[in-house]
Length: 427
Image (cartoon, rainbow, N blue to C red; front, side, top):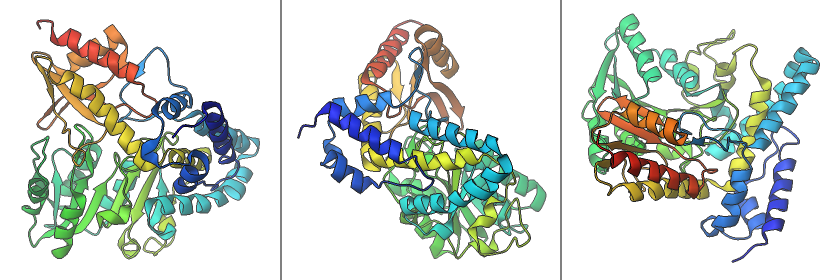
C-alpha cells in the first residue's frame, strides 16, 4: 500500500502540532493508524515513515549517538512544548505553576494510565526510575530478618538502596547471580524462585537488564511470588514505551520507569505504578500530613519542581502513540538485529545479546577478543565519532549499543565498518 510522502508528512506534522496545544490532549495509537496512515503498523513504508522520524529530532549530525539506553533525546515537538511552558512559568512562576499548570497533571495522569493499562489512581508522576523505586523500597515496612530477593545484575542505584536497608534495618538480601545471555525462560525464573523462603517479603525484578538487554520473565516470577505471599517490585526503566505490554500484564505490585528513555520525554521525568490496594501501606519519601493515605498523589509531594517538564510529557506520549508501541518495538529490534548479524561472524567479535525476540529488543552488547570494553568504546568515538558505552558489571563485559527510532541504517553501517576495522587489527 503506498502513501504520498508529502501528504503524509504534512498530516503528521499537523497532528503533532495539535497534540501540544493543551495539557492532556491525546491522539490514540488506533486513531492515528486508521485516520492518518490507513494501514496496520507492520506495513509502515520504511523509507517514508522512518525518514520523517529522523527529521523529527535535532540530534547532532557530527556524532552517531548509539547510547540512547542511558537517556534519549527528545523530538523537537517535545522540546518546543517544554520551552513554551517554561517561558510561561517565568512570566509569573507561582501563578502559572501552582494555579494553572498544576491542574494539568490530572489530565496527564489519566493519559499515562490509559497507556499503561491501569487506573489513574495508580499512577504517580516522578522524576526518574530511581526516585520511583526509592518510594517503594524505603516506603515498605520491612523488619529485621525480612528477606528481599534481587539480582547482582540489577541497577546500582537500586542495589545501593537495598544495601542501606540491610545496614540500617537488618533486612537480609538474597542474591541471584544471572548467567547472561539466556534463552531459557524457566531457568531465568527459577533463578529467583529458588531463593524464595518463608521469610521472603519482596522480590525485585529488572524487566530488561540494562547492561545486556536481557528480557526477564517478570510475570512467571510474579505468579510464583504471589503464591507464596511475596510482593513484586519491577524496575521497568528499559521496557515502558519500548515493549508492547501493559503494566497489569506483569502481575506486579509496583512498577517504576523513566519516561526520558524510550518515550523520549523531557530529562528528569518518570512514572510510578502502585497497585491501588497497596497504596495505604507505603510510606512516601516526601510525605504530606497523611502519609498513609490511599491517594497516589502522596508520592508527588516534591515541592517546587519543573512543571514544564511534566506538561511536556504529554507531547512525548502523543509522539509515541503516533509511532505506535508495536511499530517502535519491531523497528528497534530490527535495528539491533541489523548490526549484530553483520558483525557476529567477524573473527574475534562476540555478541552477548540474544537474537530471539522474546529475550531481547534494542539493546545489544558485543566484545572483541583482546580488547577491553573501554578501549573499544574509545576507538569508536575518537576514530569514528560513534558514541556507545563500555560495560563491566557482574559477569558482563562488553560495549553496549542502543539505537533509537531516529537512527539510520547508514549510521549502523558505519558502526559495522568500525567494529570490523578494530577486530581485524592485532591488539
